[in-house]
Amino acid sequence: MSKIYKTQLKNGLKIITEEMPDIQSASIGIWVNIGSKHESTVKNGISHFIEHLLFKGTEKRTALDIAREIESVGGMLNAFTGRENTCFYAKVLSKDIPLAVDLLSDIFMNSKFDKKELEKERLVVLQEIKMVEDTPDDLIHDIFAMTLWKGHPLGMPVLGTLQTINSIKRDDIVSYFKQSYLPHAVIITAAGNIEHKRLLKLLKPFEKMLDYDLKPPIKYLKSPISHSGTALEQRNLEQVHLCLGVPSPNQAHSDRYKVYLLNTLLGGGMSSRLFQEIREKRGLAYSVYSYLNLCSDVGSLVVYAGTAPDTFCKVVELILKELNVFIKKEVPKAELQSAKEQLKGGMLLGLETSESRMTKLARDEIYFKRTVTVKEIVNGIDKVTAKDIMKLANEVFNPEKITIAAIGKVKEKDLRF
Image 1 (cartoon, rainbow, N blue to C red):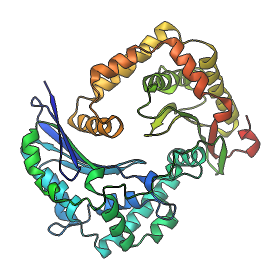
Image 2: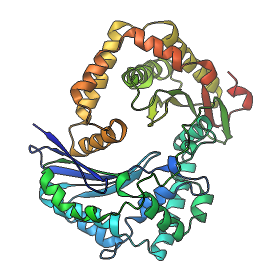
Image 3: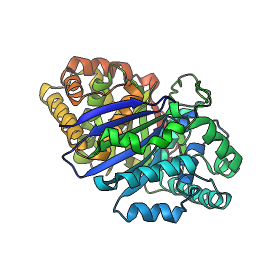
Image 4: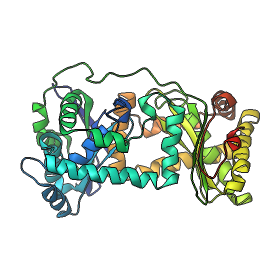
């Protein structure tokens, strides 16, 4: 039976542990409530750039030392940046927890931001941006976000642009890190075969982190306003890649379980309506699905599909038709129950690893300021009715709120629906 413990240090930093004594591994993550959403237009991509640079050497370790130490014990050390937060994490066998914590502590608190390493890593980030630009089924999601959240940092690409990354200087990096990556913005979570008291001792260095300003160091903008409309990028491709979406309830909204189920029913798997109608029945797409992008203050429900240029209009019409069905007809009882079981089963299977548990601890604290139990989630899913789904569909599938973005051989007139 796992147990969850939470400690807040005097400087505001929070440490949360889920003790799981029956497994052999442990995952530890340093979560910072800083992401691309908090960046200025001219510094877009700086959070992701910093994520890369923290692995490029400290006062006592080179980048090679960092890689060798974690791999010498068969562990994993990685990081990712999102729109609202950044995470640096490690997964190791329980016996190697001290090593993992020491590595994470060192890269987070003692990174040198060496000029030569910074310039080399700038080239790496620029290649990462070019890789996305050469991958239309990735790029279309950024174009959609920029269209939906036009004029707000939430719509900017997490990686930044070639222009912004080229313009960011070392002084910008150091200043941004010192002003933003402060204790009150940090949550350290751990899950697995690890004791909370032992972890607190290993994390002693974090007690020395100074919180220079108890007020948020970043000017948080007002919640973004969604924009309906269309965006088209002409490219000579074999397929047209499209995203069609609408604003939705946010991550902590009371309707979150309803929107989870609506997404599952619409395009959340092979039995979903979009997959069955567009791929299985008509063969118009290999990849078609829907997903949720839920943030602290806003959210979106998005459909992606890749199809031939001459079937683009047909696919969009079919997507809109399915949205309309949710508005006009209640979901049959058996279909709704199946979606509930799919959602609950996927969640429970996903929580079998230490890294997924570590991630859940952080997300619960970030969005709910408490631990949300599995029982609470299951009950929330079970309570949703067909009437709830229909009511929500009528609210979110408003034709005036639909945004469409496409890449490929599409004409402007084809985007008018």
